[in-house]
Image (cartoon, rainbow, N blue to C red; front, top):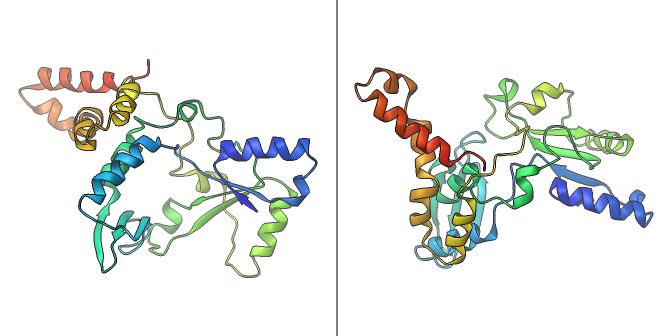
Length: 240
């Protein structure tokens, strides 16, 4: 079994066909938002290590506060030092703002149900399991091999059918737009600019735009200036 990003699975599938080895593998991908640059990760990790050193354990989706809470957790040798909702974490704010994904992610061909895998995995978001705090996985079988694997899993797991609409709920179905400032962000990361400084111009304006209630913009006496500011913020994140 090989589990990789969708684009990697597609390349592997092509190689396996050429070498007549497809039958030796079960190929698995997952719903992918995009892959951020290692420049972001290296800068983020260096920033964390100034406060936590050594980092002996890191969990991107810790379930201490439940499946839907989405927290990131770090430990040193003795105790948990960092446990924060991903909405308040610097790495995830960059990640979900799409300002430093790999170039190919902005033209991804594998969103929604498009895949070269036998099986696709992901979180099962939506109404059906909104009160579940342990976590439920969604699984799509794309061919007979995938269906046979699901049948095998049903002997040791609880498996039930769901509609594509239920499975795709909450998943990213189209690739993100490429922000104009992406190259500047990557250049600054490459020059070892502190992550907080980059956050100030690359991520914070977008967060503010999302957080300003539309009703406030309409009702406030400073409507015209707020709208102008909001449009400038939005324009910064439009595609070239």
